Length: 262
Image (cartoon, rainbow, N blue to C red; front, side, top):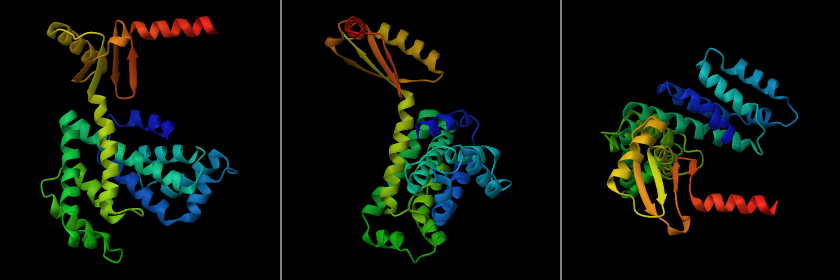
């Protein structure tokens, strides 16, 4: 999964709403075809063979980016058939959150998250809605149309995720799947928050200099979340998304101890 996300990231800067839609479309094909899933997760097949199988299936039907993303998934070993489908769903949602991020930065992600929460709250407060959206016999188009009426001011990105959750819940209740989507949106939001831990409280001037420096390094307007921890002894620890910059004395002391013990 980590490799797949790493492969996806460079494609997100210029991605449009079509990319996640295409990935969801491929996911629908995988979920409906157990034989294809087995072929793509068969450890006895070479990666090139599996990628070639997908190329035959997808070429001319999806963009080159979507094709290469799915081919990369197929070339990786997965422990179960379900895993490759779950991974593709994660990539589709990640791509969609990146589109929201492109449009309005952190506020775009906030809007997406709020729209999804609004849908969850409306559905959970009405048992008739829950039954209607959970009805396996109801046409997917009808359920999607009903769901979108519940959040009339939702962004286009939120509309895609809501439609996906009610038309293809993948064994979950739509609201539960939306909760999973919210978790992925929240993870993307962490890219806009710099969690700073300092030994002592920083002055306003120090915070301003730090914020300017971090914004320049990461190329976006970060929100600083500052806490103090005297155990650091001195220096700072900064976390932005999954990246940690540890410039504390405590970390250097720990490194020295490890070096002496080796």
